[in-house]
Length: 299
Figure 1 (cartoon, helix red, strand yellow):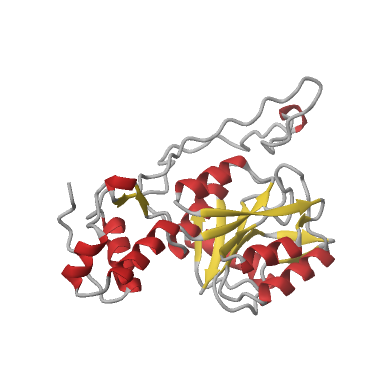
Figure 2: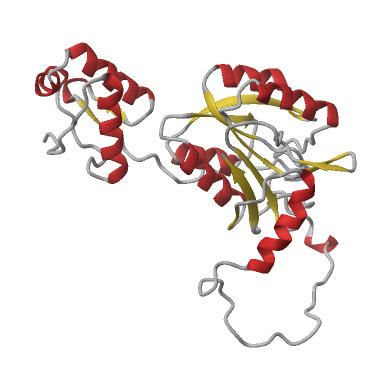
């Protein structure tokens, strides 16, 4: 059954924006049928070619799908179930999780009895002292610290950033091979992935340049402890990547705070225009896991 939502617009861009807005607001649910091209063209007083162009853009962005005689419908929400990592062959050690051997960790015992009280931050979500500490930590590196936010782990932080800055169908440059949970997250957000090759020093500058030229709107990379290779940016690699990113100031960059040969510096150039995001685990130097993450952002 055709949807009752009234699509508007006098241009292909306007029609596509009207449909996308309805999908985002829930007025058009997954599976809802869009009007046939000629009927919508007559209703809007535009040419069938204009409507066809709008539908084509929506298909490319993954917002709608074509079912042959079934017409054009709103695309189904992508599955969020995580893919299973491959079984590790006997005799090899699985490094993909990034977790240290518990036997090598010190025994952490509270110095005194914990006082009773609330263990949730919901009543006071803004912790001014913690925010000040983060600003003091990141500020010397040239990272903008006007706006600081906290997330429940690196995946939560990446998901928030991509959801805010991108739209369904946008392309994201991703490490290949990369962290499988992160790949699942990007798919679940309705985004497209462009693979970027990596080596022992992280993402390859020429691969990043090719992905950006192919239309990537964001880059997600690991300056250290890349999963699964374990690579780490060298000073030379970081400078080369910054040179590539300066050619695309409109691209969202997300990376973790890193140390390069004893020097602290952000993965993104503070002088770049556009959107820059920086994330780090609470410990700052260990392999990223599921602990709290923080980020600074500017537009």
